[in-house]
Image (tube, rainbow over all chains, first blue to last red; front, top):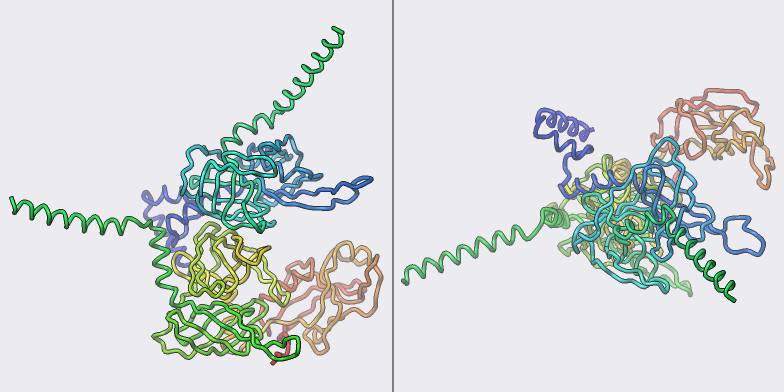
Length: 271
Length: 363
């Protein structure tokens, strides 16, 4: 009760100091007394970015002799809204081997998603949901080339199925090359913000609320966070996703097949 | 010449002092200064708790086992707030203040349902630095959270992070659900239990209680019981030693829409009474429990009891909703239930809540 009265009097004071306080109120719609500037930044970034991060639940089937009658395993991951009409980017390993993919939005809508394209090489996948007439909130893409070691980053995701979790830390290092199952992932961002299973595909944003990376993997002897997490830089996402979205890579693949076929055909004719 | 030199030297000294001073002040960001200030102000109010539990070994010999936890001084009379699971079954409780002084603590009260306990030490007032309690009502995801505690028995440790989420649900050791639990990425480890979670203004907003971890140590997912929950039970714990929970005196079962259809009941969903405690509030109000068994698929269900569909005009769709509603009330409060009897009659019943019987303490 006492708090309410305090808050109310604070609001009255804010209105009386109209001109000076207005920009502040505009900048932080949920401004409350007693927060430091650092906290206000974190809170406002979370409130701006959280609607663009979705939870992904997958159902997979282990290979069976006949067919897959019952989904045998479930997984969870995170995703980021690239386009308001329902284009979501996540990690390839989140949706790989999934039979059904369900996406839970920040507004608790649960929709089924289809994989548009997936690139194991970049560990990126683009999925699509039918959002109807309620468009999603797009994330703002930043520039991962400007990242400095020591700058603040926020990770938003779905660790262990705990949706909408915010963790914070700093950029520990940029340009890491990490071996991942026989494949080397290049130029990753290293962070000490807690990244755990389920955070995969989630957003790593800077203090201005711009996406700088996609949380992808961790280095850990235990399988859960020890303070060394890695994210795919957003500039790679910007390069790769348009191709994935429009299927250019698939088109190129088919063109290659066509050329080879033509070439073989030519050889046969000559014989 | 010498005079100028002297002046120059003096200037240099003065300048370097100014530079040093500015360096000191400017080397730390506002955020760091805030952390340091909070730690220095509040750390004296955080205590280490060592509990000794008597156990029997393989040969049935009694052997003591020690556990460590944390607590916060909440009152200049020496009351200490901690977790129930820190002091559970303890034969001996020892509290170490930040100054290193040790006191034997007395258990004042504990509530396993919310995992809150209160201890008391007889220390002189000047030894006791009180941690002020705030509110956990208007917490924002992203605001700073500081944890002070005794992880792995290391003694006074500060870890910082942010509030990762609010409104999580946690299951206490006796199976009861604690709601509105705060999630933080400040490192919480075994031994941090019972310690305070503090906001940037130096107010206690939670009691660090549990972690989610496959390894047993912090992975950046810690949980704190909100201070408002602790405040709710605190007065009762100090006064009576326990928190009196309201009691309706019935065993309930969720009547799901599917079950209602299978039993051909004229209700969509609700909470069905399985058994009514003899002499309890429900029996006194004339409610009836089940009296026969029915087989639904592979399950045997006790049927024939009344079905609660509304409490104080609030619709009830499952047993949990009813329990959640009643837990917010106190013994002696009256509720108006809308009940559908097994015969399909709609009735309004007034029930005066009783006090939940407490399990006999093992000693």
